[in-house]
Length: 157
Image (cartoon, rainbow, N blue to C red; front, side, top):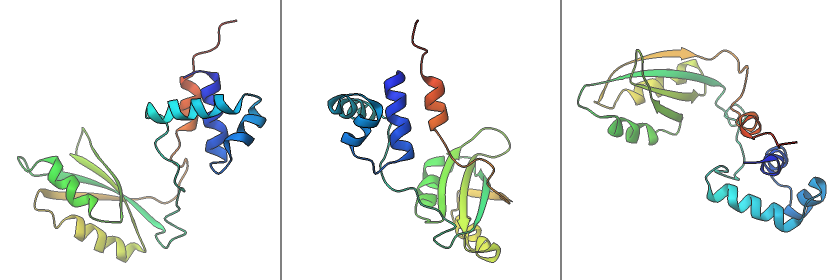
């Protein structure tokens, strides 16, 4: 990535519905350059989507929790991940190191509904136990643009 890629990412991250022609005008570079950079960033897997970012709170899921799952030895992470993928309230899951084996971010309609989500997660026979931490407030929402900016090599003078 270079400075132009970073600027293209910045403008589309802040205004994803912006047209390529308008982005080229604002950035002061050719429309073809903007389109070529976008195509390159998508092909390289840097840009992974253009869909709308959704707010779980706004669609009725104000409770966020993090589940640390302990997986039964020999059960395998793939079966657990497949089970979790079938639960709409599971937003993401990662295999981890440390005290647990897998971490999942889940949402619920209320604390009582969180119990339903946890119970649903625990129906997978490969999960031995779960510990739960409820998020009280979002201090830094998920973000990647600052990382993309930091990854740009400075232009030599």
